[in-house]
Length: 496
Ligand SMILES: Cc1cc2nc3c(=O)[nH]c(=O)nc-3n(C[C@H](O)[C@H](O)[C@H](O)COP(=O)(O)OP(=O)(O)OC[C@H]3O[C@@H](n4cnc5c(N)ncnc54)[C@H](O)[C@@H]3O)c2cc1C
Image 1 (cartoon, rainbow, N blue to C red):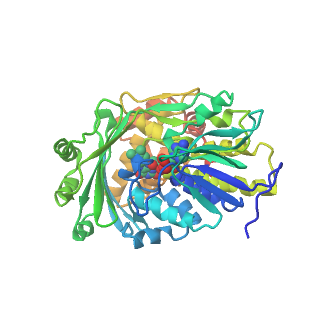
Image 2 (image 1 turned 90 degrees about the vertical axis):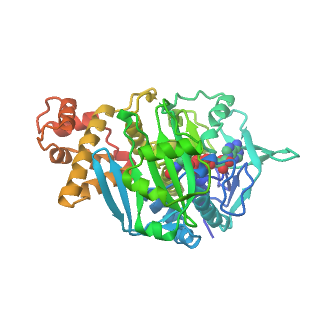
Image 3 (image 1 turned 90 degrees about the horizontal axis):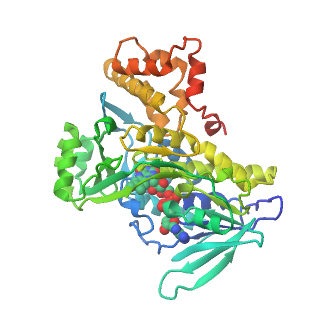
């Protein structure tokens, strides 16, 4: 029997999660260890098989889980990768991944067991696990339309639900904790304002990104011959990215991506093919020729990524939390959203465990503060990359730290990493770069004075000159100090 959480004020009985997407499922899984009853309210009717649904329009597009996310999801749902493989997902164990960077191509072999699937199959697999947890209950076809609160609006005490369908009946559910995981379309800011709260300015990355995705049937021998192939974007030249992902049932997805708003990838099949062949490297072109298209391309666009700063609200109501895209969403090309949702769920688990032993009076605000610390590397890394595109802007109360320096540093780092891999058959530098972008390693493992000494070879290249210009005339001794001034420490993101 699970022990219910003791909060300072009450014995907590019931928690409610708004939204049954990836963040909602992970959050409910965590809460089920601490609350007697957990309810997930989802506005969609949930499909009986792994198919896309209206509430998650992004699920048509490729979704990969980064290594940090995989680790956390596996902790909460042990063996979920096996489940995916049993349902026909593509095994990526020992698969060769070839990446075409502006500095040359590079192949990396993935030696860990992992599965690549559609977002619909991933969500369905995790949902099945959640549906088997006895104290988690689903309310489907129910849209949360507002909060129930205490008379002084200092506490959220439940939600107001409107049934979807003919009757459109409304009902109220009282609960001890509400967690908003309703995604990009969250109404949380509006609801907080209706409660009389002043909401701090959010950080916005005006990124104007566009996706276009097409599905293909692939014969198994093609997958065996070729691993995964991708061409990285070259924002400075206005060139988008192109990639291929294998998913379940011998299907593949191709993806075109662009940011900055000047050009969006086409959805007309002829124009799509043309752009794919223009962006694709020769290897990808050969590969796509072996595919049989089974869908027309479909697009997805968003004008901005938003990071809320609710943790700054001294009067943040008790009984309320937020996670997933509703708290912070990203340009999806970096594949971070689901992993960040997993990181937040893990942080919630840590905070609830601590709360059980040492109750904190402002528990909810404390959780939000720690979630912010945990997601900082993801926001910083994706913003640094996106700000290379003409037309992309960061807007917020504080400027982002170290943008130009980090861009120049990563230019030189990737150049040297590709050289080391191709000339010395040593891909350790590149692996480290991948692990940073997979949110496993702190950016400080890549940006530090030791690494700086390694990448500055004195070859007089343009990248080296540009980086030295950013560093100014700091002596070798002062280098670490200069780096500390330029780049965030990310200490609190990894030391929890
Ligand atoms: C094109 C695209 C590609 C992406 N690719 C990747 C990738 O490769 N890797 C990755 O990690 N992430 C990717 N993402 C991001 C990823 O989809 C999200 O970050 C992730 O799913 C977490 O989302 P969430 O659970 O917070 O929201 P969602 O998954 O959007 O779920 C929100 C849920 O809330 C429900 N809902 C909304 N409002 C209400 C309401 N009022 N009442 C009840 N229910 C409600 C919705 O129906 C939905 O089910 C991509 C995103 C896009 C747009």
